[in-house]
Length: 101
Picture 1 (cartoon, helix red, strand yellow):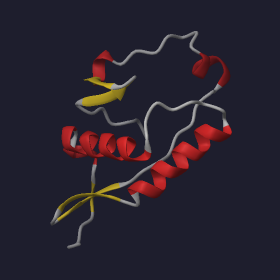
Picture 2 (cartoon, one colour):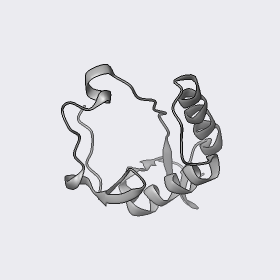
Picture 3 (cartoon, one colour):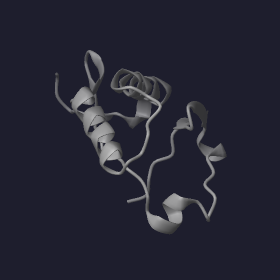
Picture 4 (tube, helix red, strand yellow):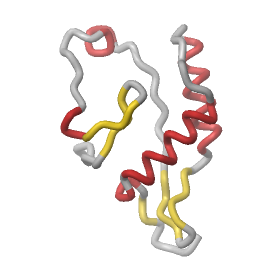
Protein backbone atom coordinates (compact mmCIF):
# COMPACT_ATOMS: atom_id res chain seq x y z
CA UNK A 1 0.00 0.00 0.00
CA UNK A 2 1.60 3.29 -1.08
CA UNK A 3 2.07 6.10 1.39
CA UNK A 4 -0.56 8.80 0.97
CA UNK A 5 0.89 12.21 0.15
CA UNK A 6 -0.06 15.06 2.47
CA UNK A 7 0.08 18.83 2.14
CA UNK A 8 2.92 19.44 4.60
CA UNK A 9 5.68 17.43 6.22
CA UNK A 10 7.85 18.36 9.20
CA UNK A 11 11.54 18.21 8.29
CA UNK A 12 14.45 19.37 10.42
CA UNK A 13 12.29 21.65 12.54
CA UNK A 14 10.22 23.33 9.86
CA UNK A 15 7.12 22.65 7.76
CA UNK A 16 7.74 22.05 4.07
CA UNK A 17 5.58 20.96 1.16
CA UNK A 18 5.41 17.20 0.58
CA UNK A 19 6.97 17.54 -2.89
CA UNK A 20 9.91 19.54 -1.48
CA UNK A 21 10.96 16.79 0.96
CA UNK A 22 14.26 15.37 -0.29
CA UNK A 23 16.68 12.82 1.16
CA UNK A 24 20.18 12.35 -0.20
CA UNK A 25 20.93 8.82 -1.36
CA UNK A 26 24.14 8.78 0.73
CA UNK A 27 22.49 9.86 3.97
CA UNK A 28 23.23 7.67 6.99
CA UNK A 29 19.61 6.62 7.35
CA UNK A 30 19.58 5.19 3.81
CA UNK A 31 22.97 3.48 3.98
CA UNK A 32 22.76 2.09 7.51
CA UNK A 33 19.10 2.25 8.48
CA UNK A 34 19.81 4.62 11.38
CA UNK A 35 16.42 5.89 12.42
CA UNK A 36 13.79 5.75 15.12
CA UNK A 37 10.09 5.97 14.43
CA UNK A 38 6.76 5.56 16.14
CA UNK A 39 3.51 4.67 14.40
CA UNK A 40 0.72 6.91 15.67
CA UNK A 41 -2.96 6.75 14.75
CA UNK A 42 -5.27 9.73 14.44
CA UNK A 43 -9.03 9.28 14.31
CA UNK A 44 -11.63 11.62 12.89
CA UNK A 45 -14.29 11.89 15.60
CA UNK A 46 -17.40 14.04 16.00
CA UNK A 47 -15.40 16.21 18.41
CA UNK A 48 -12.61 16.62 15.87
CA UNK A 49 -9.31 14.81 15.27
CA UNK A 50 -8.11 12.58 18.11
CA UNK A 51 -4.54 11.32 18.24
CA UNK A 52 -4.50 7.99 20.06
CA UNK A 53 -2.26 7.98 23.18
CA UNK A 54 -0.14 10.84 21.90
CA UNK A 55 2.08 11.34 24.96
CA UNK A 56 2.76 7.60 25.30
CA UNK A 57 3.80 7.39 21.65
CA UNK A 58 6.05 10.42 21.98
CA UNK A 59 7.66 8.99 25.11
CA UNK A 60 8.43 5.74 23.26
CA UNK A 61 9.94 7.76 20.41
CA UNK A 62 12.18 9.63 22.86
CA UNK A 63 13.13 6.38 24.63
CA UNK A 64 14.05 4.75 21.30
CA UNK A 65 16.27 7.71 20.43
CA UNK A 66 18.01 7.48 23.82
CA UNK A 67 18.70 3.77 23.29
CA UNK A 68 20.14 4.61 19.88
CA UNK A 69 22.16 7.44 21.50
CA UNK A 70 20.51 10.12 19.41
CA UNK A 71 20.24 13.58 20.88
CA UNK A 72 16.81 15.09 20.31
CA UNK A 73 16.41 18.88 20.35
CA UNK A 74 12.70 18.60 21.25
CA UNK A 75 10.82 17.75 24.43
CA UNK A 76 7.86 15.41 24.70
CA UNK A 77 5.54 18.45 24.78
CA UNK A 78 7.15 19.93 21.68
CA UNK A 79 6.81 16.63 19.81
CA UNK A 80 3.15 16.40 20.87
CA UNK A 81 2.48 19.97 19.69
CA UNK A 82 4.16 19.22 16.36
CA UNK A 83 1.94 16.14 15.92
CA UNK A 84 -1.13 18.28 16.57
CA UNK A 85 0.09 20.86 14.04
CA UNK A 86 0.62 18.03 11.55
CA UNK A 87 -3.01 16.94 11.93
CA UNK A 88 -4.21 20.53 11.59
CA UNK A 89 -2.14 20.99 8.41
CA UNK A 90 -3.20 17.64 6.94
CA UNK A 91 -6.77 16.84 8.00
CA UNK A 92 -6.95 13.87 5.62
CA UNK A 93 -4.37 11.99 7.70
CA UNK A 94 -7.00 10.99 10.29
CA UNK A 95 -8.82 7.69 9.93
CA UNK A 96 -12.62 7.89 9.87
CA UNK A 97 -14.03 5.94 12.78
CA UNK A 98 -17.39 5.17 11.21
CA UNK A 99 -19.07 5.64 14.58
CA UNK A 100 -19.59 8.38 17.08
CA UNK A 101 -16.82 8.92 19.59
